[in-house]
Length: 257
Image (cartoon, rainbow, N blue to C red):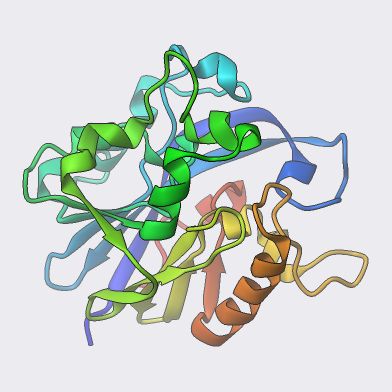
């Protein structure tokens, strides 16, 4: 069994984000500073995988569609990788947890024709024609906007359900936040870590809250019942759950070593 390590990469910051958008019906009106996180996953034998690629630049033409972002030049995913000694051309696989704008920008910096991009088929289908309420999040069906993942469409592989990407590395469907929300299971020397995407925005989504909830769904969802079913699945498959928009993920420089 190959063991991997996981490095969180800061690829942008929401300076004032409504907390209840992350935690359903929790602390409405409370604003928090929240990171956008990409993940560098490295195997013992040189395997190099990236999970999510972050949001657009702060001055992008589509910035008006979204919450205010702080995205400095060093936040761009290729520059964040180089800070850890990784050339984007050496990345074999990029995995999208889902196709919301803050998870799939700048994919074109992975210039190797051999780099493949994995996304759940259900998310790819929905991202093309979401309901009006979700169009801005996908930057789809918005006049003048083109979904960022279109730039690597020729290298996208649509996955239907759970697969083994590599021995010790899985791509698993976690629907609810979006129809094709997904996560990545990573076998480390410290157990199976799950990069859970926006199913787990903050660690409280997983650990529950003061009102006795075992888990708290994300405040943004397409199917809240599916969110609860996804929580049950996570309980079965993961030893450690990592959140997608929580600065506490940077309490460790690296996971699993």
